[in-house]
Image (cartoon, rainbow, N blue to C red; front, side, top):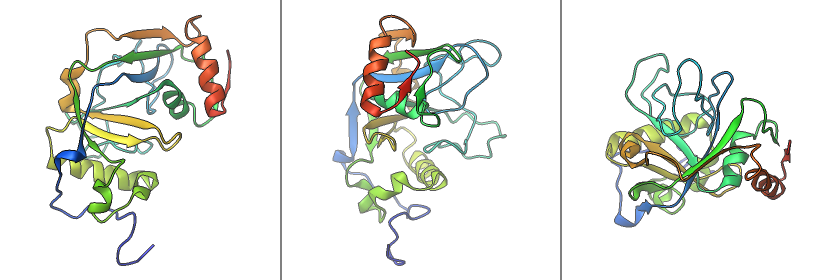
Length: 223
């Protein structure tokens, strides 16, 4: 790493610029793993859907920034009230599982009664594509996406402030390298009324999906 041109600068130099090819129009299926019972879990793709402080599968989280999250755009501190929202999703089931269960590397289909939910946005999502050359053109590098979460949040916050109408980010998973999508407030109108797919992880239709994904990412599972 050069001291003059670090690969992971703590903050972007402004003004930021964007070319048409930097914005990806994403209209594919998105996936989340969410718990339906138990204590509130703050994770990439887990959320509570019953009990106090219920949130639905399509609700953006306005509490933040949270230390374990990489692309929260909230101004902070986390105790302050904010209308800034974020929702993290994966573009494939294996990546969603890899992110959610990364601490134990065991896909537990019982604790919290987790469910798998997939949906297709009702319109193309305009996402800043961080998997190509945008970062290097802004004196950073691809390494930034695997750097400290505080740095990623600073970049996300600056991007969000610069282009408040952007739906979010298209980024690689730090677990699988496959695409993840980070959604911000403008994407709130892109959710369908009902998802295309939602089943508990221990549902007979989901168990073979879990087994295949577990083999792919090398995780254990309870199915």
